[in-house]
Amino acid sequence: MATEGGTLASARPAAGWIGRARHRPIALAAVGFATLVVVIGLGVAMGSVAIAPIDTLAIIAHRLFGLDLGRSWSVSADTIVWDLRVPRVLMSLVVGTALAVAGATFQGLLRNPLADPYVLGTASGAALGAAIAVLLPIRIVILGFGLLQGLAFVGALASIYTVYRLSRIGGLSPLTSLLLTGYAVGSLLAAGLAMAMYISGAALRQIFSYLLGGFDGASWSQLAATLPLVAIGSALIILRARTLNGLLLGEEAAAHLGIDVVRERAVLLALASLITAAAVAVSGLIGFVGLVVPHVVRLIVGPSARLVLPLSALGGAVLLAFADVVARSAGDIPVGIVTALVGAPFFILLLRRSRTGYEL
Image (cartoon, rainbow, N blue to C red; front, side, top):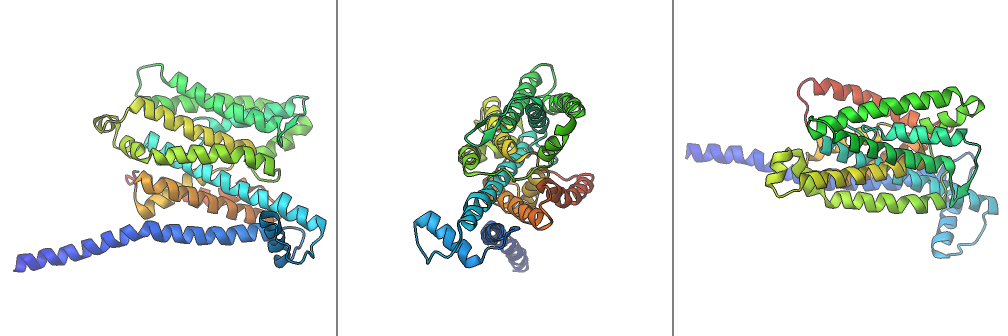
């Protein structure tokens, strides 16, 4: 009986811990959605022009549902709320989702806790594309997208494609080759960006604005073009959560589970790169979201991609929308500065933990 009692005593704490662990994703999702509602409200209500909250709600209700709640607002207030603030808030949610999901995917694919959406040169490619667009004497706008957004998108995808193709040459393991090639290509593109900045002259400020990131130019047309790419790409990644879990175990283990390692790695790499390129094309380079959010989620709910991916999407949306609110309240500073102030201390802590054997 003593043995049975000891077994029961040891089983009760374990059962209690498992029960609490099962409720963690639900609690995290509930807190995340509640915070999201608050942040969206703050984002739409805040601005340099004071608009009464009741008028803000009335404008949104009128635009969405055609309700006329005693129209007392001006045309300028309607334009500010619906054409400027709402698209900006929604764009921050979309970009935050894309960066967090891409970050979680790259960390799983590369089995590297320090990986982020820009680890394979995406940022350098987008930045060089944007810099070239600034230098070219061409000014076109199609569906709210200028040459800067177009070349940034193309540059990001071209960079990741080049890295992937070059990484398949040589005798190194696929993951090691990807990382080393990404570093080499990223360094080369960064040199090109430095040269473009050196010769840019008066256009240097515009290039810096893109490098620091923000949502000043957010519009409904940009949102309509970006949202489908991010939504479909993120959904397809989340549907492959089982594959990502298998790849975390290693290539041989994943193959034993029936996963086509080469094909699935290529598909996940393409999807994560696509949503990253779509995000940076409209927002510029915003760092640390794809690094910080997946780690916080993983520390709370564990390593399973089935939980990490959707919760990271929610966390990324909340974090970037909140960072945008902080940036506007601080005098409309670049959002990338705010995320760096949050992410840099976390990154330092992460490096300290990695010395003691931190793993995914």
